[in-house]
Length: 89
Image (cartoon, rainbow, N blue to C red; front, side, top):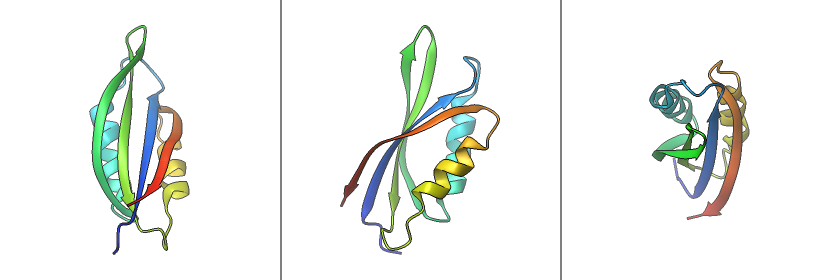
């Protein structure tokens, strides 16, 4: 698999008490079918709410970001998923 696209996403939890590390583990498992999770970082948003920003490496001929977004949105602990940046490597 040739990983030649970098996608940066932000995952916003449904609740302030949501364990973002567990969402990161889910994201890693989901990403394996389409590429790989390169990195993830928990960042503050406001008023004690944090989000998970992650970089996923994908093969542009296989796509996958739409499927990854959809699977993340299906998780109960996820409120929102935003694609922040897409670039070729």
